[in-house]
Image 1: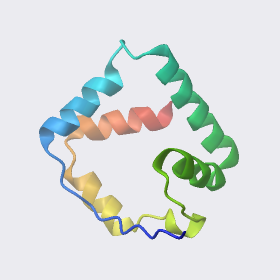
Image 2: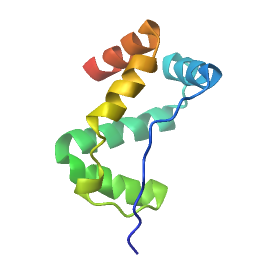
Image 3: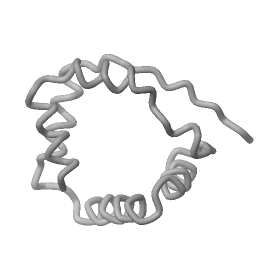
Length: 97
C-alpha cells in the first residue's frame, strides 16, 4: 500500500517547543530510550536514507521511498526563521553531536 504524505510547515505552540527542549536537555531520560535513539541515529548515519525509510515503516507504519524524504528548502527556511535564537542554537548543538 503506497501512502503519500503531504508535509507542510506548521507553527507549533511555544509551549510545545519548550516541552521538547525540556525533554531534550533532561538528564532523567530512561536508559532504554537513550539506547534506542542512539541505535536509530547510528543506523541512519551508516545506512542513510534507506535506514530512514525502514525506520519510518517500522515505527510510523508509513511506506515511503527515498524521493519522498526531501523537504523543500522554502519550508526549511520558514521553520528556521520562526525559531528563537535559543532554539536555533539547541538544534545546531544537536547537529554537532
